[in-house]
Image 1 (tube, rainbow, N blue to C red):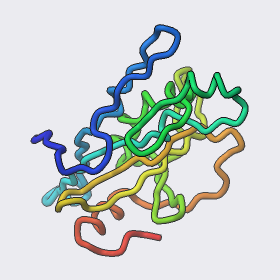
Image 2 (cartoon, rainbow, N blue to C red; image 1 turned 135 degrees about the vertical axis):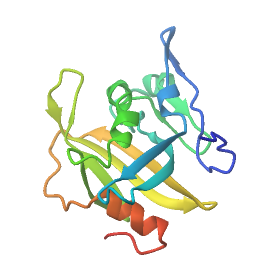
Image 3 (cartoon, helix red, strand yellow; image 1 turned 90 degrees about the horizontal axis):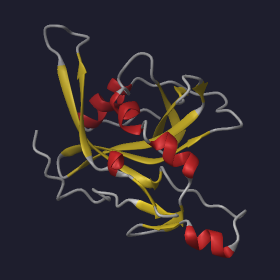
Image 4 (cartoon, rainbow, N blue to C red; image 1 turned 30 degrees about the horizontal axis):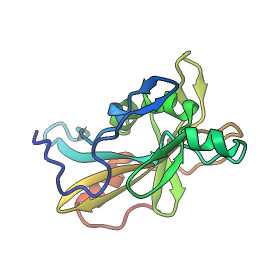
Length: 183
């Protein structure tokens, strides 16, 4: 598969974050392809190939609890925005590529997140304990290619609340065929 992401208008390669002489590798959030195969019709499976990108909010968090000095030490500068690096979000972000690749699986919940965004919730943390993890993403076409951009991802400590489920293949099929996305 061609990995040419020159037309993608998001960060394609994240630079590492350095804090207290330790590097925090962000290469797991670099742009990549994800392919989903809708094989409901065994005689006519439909492949959907998405360019996947991740936003700054997947590993940073605005914090008013930090002093000015602490805030500056934790500041991560991206091309369009700067925010404080979040160690908690960073640890969770390591799961994002596998979460995104699993969007079409029956065990992954995809729901509406408002503003034409979708989200997945209820994932396992590093201790195999189910937690509410809100992964907000948007799908769209960019230069005739399917795109999936993860806007933000964070653990929801107060719970997700009621969600309205939507099938990932319904989203992908509508996007591919220039139809209105589920709302």
